[in-house]
Amino acid sequence: MAYDYGRRRSRSRSRDRYDNGSRGAGGRGGYYGGYGGGYGGGNGGYYGGNYAGGSYNNTGLGGGLREQDWSQVTLAKFEKNFYVEHPDVAAMSQDEVDKVRKDRQITVVHGKGVPKPIVAFEQAGFPDYILHEIKQAGFERPSPIQVQGWPVAMSGRDMVGIAETGSGKTLAFLLPAIVHINAQPYLQRGDGPIVLVLAPTRELAVQTQEECNRFGRSSRIRNTCVYGGTPRGPQARALSEGVEICIATPGRLIDFLESGRTNLRRVTYLVLDEADRMLDMGFEPQIRKITSQVRPDRQTLLWSATWPKEIQGLARDLCREEPVHINVGSMSLRACHNVTQYVDVVQEYEKKDKLKQLLERIMDGSKIVVFTDTKRAADDLTRMLRMDGWPALCIHGDKKQEERDWVLQEFKSGKSPIMIATDVASRGLDVKDLRHVINYDFPGQIEDYVHRIGRTGRAGTKGSAYSFFTPDKYKMAKDLIGVLREAEQAIPPELEKIAQSSIGYGGSSNGRWGGARGGGGYRGGNGGYRRY
Image (cartoon, rainbow, N blue to C red):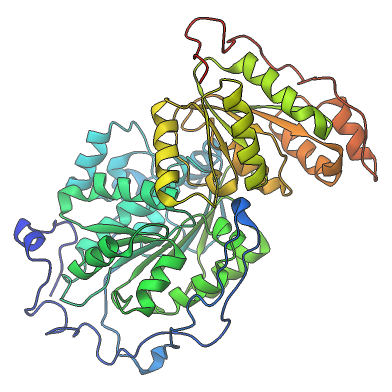
């Protein structure tokens, strides 16, 4: 029978989570006949290296999953194309389409029959209950990734979206996911989720869940968030009770799959959020094992801030059809233009004193994240700053989950406005009023530099990024200059000298920031924090 995707889940359905009647394929587990178990046997484990100052040892994750032969499975049909082009959009000429994309720096890199972009929420084809939630949220207009991403996702197409953090990509995949769920048969007892969102970090997963709670409320859609570092019990119970949306980090999800706490038989809408970071953390084998448990004719949406060869290969393998590839912003690696970048070429021994001097200049109670390369450096800096009276806390991979949660809460509330962090917090950390980022240790990859400074300057706000660049990082100088030049930022002469040298540069910059603004002294002025 025809199915009305515009209807919401009824209140009675929200109380009784399962439909044991005719909807679906009849009876418990009847949605698929002959589902045969998991994946496995192949790659075994993978060491993700020294990510976030703490080792992610992924060895053995997924080894208990058996390979799924989908040719032996009878797959029930499902709806995934819900897009009805708005008359105003249909009337747009090609010149108008090109102008909409150009004005918003949208590039359709690849794809056949790509839907035209929309310019208003009412043109996206969403049901009234979603438009109501958008209105309640107070959004004025779609973001660029939503302008082109919504028509593609609502059409049921596979998609690759390349956009910087804070671009609105969460709603770009979440609102079509809600429409998708409401067009599927109700969950039966024993069913897993309909929508699966894989995320690299607990912080990003929780942020996504908050948006699910906000926009899925009117549809009676349940979700859960599963990630490591916390007790398994509450997460396992939520999965057992039945959820339409599961947001998960790869390791914990594989744990639940291996133990039989959930399954992915019902997943027809798959999202990989910040896929580049998941690969950086060494989760590619786990991603492949997880996705092997999902029916191959699913709709797949892959989101990334960068487009390296590894992500290109993953997209080719995971997408059933040739995906629509959308890029928002420059096609080359670029930093957020709302962030003013300052680079100080220094010697290693100068960094601690220069950090204190910088904090004296910029600290006025605003939030600051200081990035280090190692756990030890994070701990040492935190001790030093606290002994000097600065309200600093640190977060890294060796911290227990409870302590990390507490540190983030203290930081977000402003009680401890300085957070020392390894890269565990460089992605997925959503702090809207973060004013300053300091790279105490300059990262070894230019992508990590862009990711770090992208924590500030979000959603149209202005931010500043300060980086200590030491001569031993001379191989990064050319790439850094390219990022600075693209964003029309000041380039220190010392950095240019390093870039021209094949053996590095040994001079000190004597504190030249290329125009760093002063003011806002932290202690001794108005609102100064007392020493601990």
